[in-house]
Image 1 (cartoon, rainbow, N blue to C red):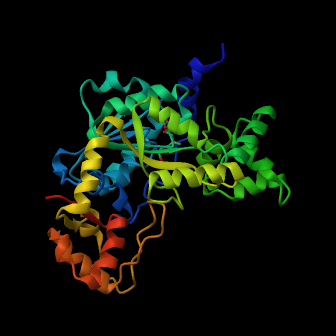
Image 2: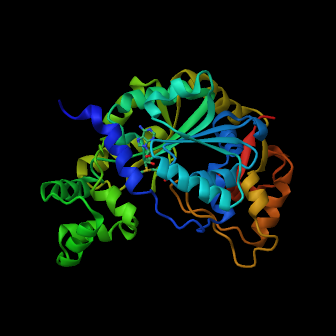
Image 3: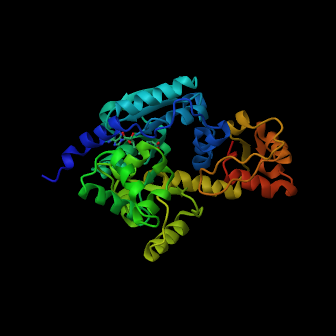
Length: 376
Ligand SMILES: C[S@@+](CC[C@H](N)C(=O)[O-])C[C@H]1O[C@@H](n2cnc3c(N)ncnc32)[C@H](O)[C@@H]1O
């Protein structure tokens, strides 16, 4: 017995004890910072089509206690399903979402690897599975489930631990196990005693997660946390019929192949410091995506405002507004002229009609997903 069959039970018990992330119920996010979770903008990015927001189906696979709230804020018209092993996380997520007056989320307790039985024939436009796959022993089954639950043209956002970036935390986690430490209070006591410059101190000081109890528990007391090299991750995706579409961790290059090569080099030099965050899609939809890429190059397209930006941009951004980076790079600031420029895209505008003087800024806003581009 290697204990693998008890992993879901132990992981569930961990998240029943440590609600993650442990944000206060009233903590809120700026509306504009949810721009990268908007389904219409993401659908346009990958498919070049407008999606009727009323028909949008989003799955938060391993939702945790917080993500339903910003996702609902970004997608008030879509139907969102929050699935999680932990009823404590779902309960907190429901409170948080309701307290902020969002009621378009269904909360469902269950195991992602069994989700096909839960959902029957239902499929989703967007699945957010952030920080979850590495906690599932049968990660291939989880990825295959994601594949099965994606509609044609749909995509999933993943974050998984990088072996290189996570190595110091993993050794600290092993040390906790050897020392028999099972409680956050004991971890904190150890941290207080740790010398300045010690491994434990350095590794905890370097991460914002260590600032709250459930973050500390996630880092050091988690019953199951696997890490991946890039090749291992790509191999698993391939086996599950998925392919990377866009890496979005800090510093990522836009082109998938260029970013993969960069990551491999960093792994060889052992200087990779970020986990892998990326959008993936079904391999069988690749021809559709190629068609969209080709169309962009040689057909007329239309640009319109990301609905989140439309709703949350201040009327007069006297102090330039810079939405938080969610796609791996710093966002362009939106100053007063930028706001006026963006407002023109309240209604779709033909790309060919954009004045040369505005093209560079418009390109940056498209890249940042403040604007979305479609064929019609
Ligand atoms: C690190 S938290 C991430 C939460 C959220 N995605 C976020 O980014 O804030 C991992 C979550 O995945 C859930 N989880 C782990 N294994 C799961 C499984 N097999 N099925 C469903 N949820 C699972 C845990 O209960 C926990 O809420």
